[in-house]
Image 1: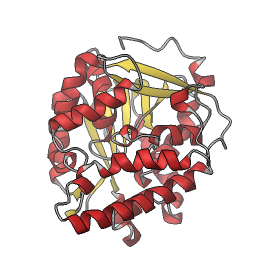
Image 2 (image 1 turned 120 degrees about the vertical axis):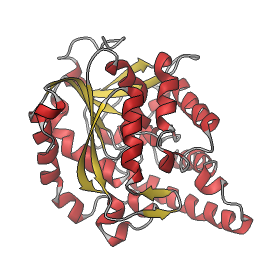
Image 3 (image 1 turned 135 degrees about the vertical axis):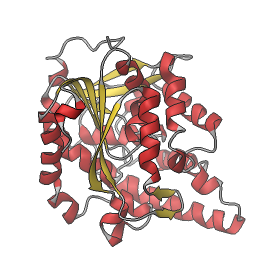
Length: 327
């Protein structure tokens, strides 16, 4: 557990990040804003790599620690690694990208109590004005475990859920996840997923995936064609499994939009400091900007750029007005 004396006692905000890069990809603009007026801490959870691993878009190894230090300097936050073992190394059944998006295994769930104790033990040693935790959009097992470990904190008015990037950039991904967690505001963009609409949702989600480097970057046509079939089938099954969970939680949710226009460029620069990871998500910096911009335009009016956060409505009603300028 980090020494609170070494960290300092008071923080403007704390972000729980499943991996080295998740907080920056998801909330980098907000982190930069908050760090301009106070101290910000990022707690990276699954940061232990027993060995180097590279397969397809997955690249895990000690170089990631250097990347995190550079990103922290770029955005002005403090960074602590909790040293939990990354999913790719935890069990042999996680040895591929697709398997990382399976539901948490029994062994994963058995460790939730210990994981919760590690995170809350660290939080108990400091003071903070706001806490940001992942929603688990995209269903990566480590993101889901961080969400489950911190979910009991959601009834506090200072706790916010953030939309996990790059998964929140995928059409339908946020909509499907938010309806698993509760009841969002009634808008067309957040309409509840239905079995009748699954085919159309699958097509737009598949189209997005097939345009990304892991698939579109395959130079061999036969291999790329086969990958499209496999990915399409996998996505269909994944979405069908989760659509059955839609609407099971009757918990009203409140959406909060933060304008990050002034810090957007710094966010993108920080994202590109994670050189071992970023190529698995975007072809280049322009592609990264384009995809984040398209996502932002679903949240608010262009040319502004935004990040979105969520709260339980009951908790939101007990907090002061969400600070539009974070000051």
